[in-house]
Structure formats: C-alpha cells, structure tokens
Image (cartoon, rainbow, N blue to C red; front, side, top):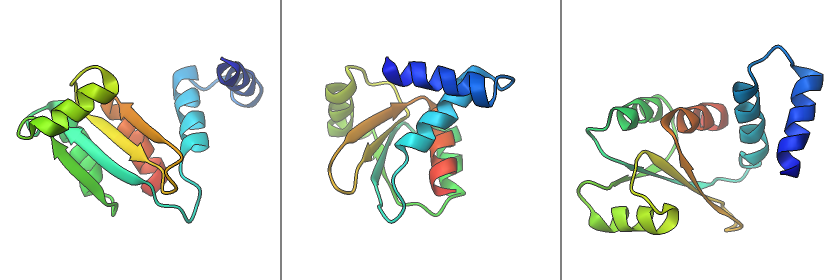
Length: 122
C-alpha cells in the first residue's frame, strides 16, 4: 500500500497530465526491472492459438532475448506449474526469476508483458 501511495504522490508531482495507469505501469516496471549486469531467467507460459499470446510472441520475435517457451496446451506439467503458482491456467504469463534467486515473479496480461520486455530488453 505504501508503494501505491508513493507512486500516486510521484504521479501528481511529476506528470499529472499522463494517464495514471500508464504512469504506474512504467514506474513499477522501472523499479522492478533487473539491475544492469544481471540477467533474469524468463519463461513464457502460452498457447499458440491464443491471440493475446500471439501478440506477446510478436514482441519476443523482435527482441534479442532468451525466453523459454512453455506451451501449456501440449505440456500438462507447464499448465500444472502455472496453476500451482497462480491458481489459474490463463495465458500468457511471463515467469521472471532473478539471476540471484532473490525473487520469482509471475506477470500476467499481454500488454504488461509486452511493455516489460520492450522497456527492459528492447
């Protein structure tokens, strides 16, 4: 909650004309992105026929970033892992594991994933 209050104060002070959702997303991605010199391990849980996944796959194709592809429609273990971590099997979800093992994040939502990849690795 404290993080949201700080973000709100910063939004009002620095860019009140910018849409708050876009400002918060960019701010959080900036703060949560890996430090330079570190390489997070990335894995995309997806289904090849999902239009939201296809959009994310298009972003990945344009970047030079190593991402493990985990097709949940053909590998039940990938689907089980996703459900165990998030309580649901909806895709796409980007799993971000810190290089030093200090965190393991599961990022849903195709637009958030695309923005994170572009801003972090683009």
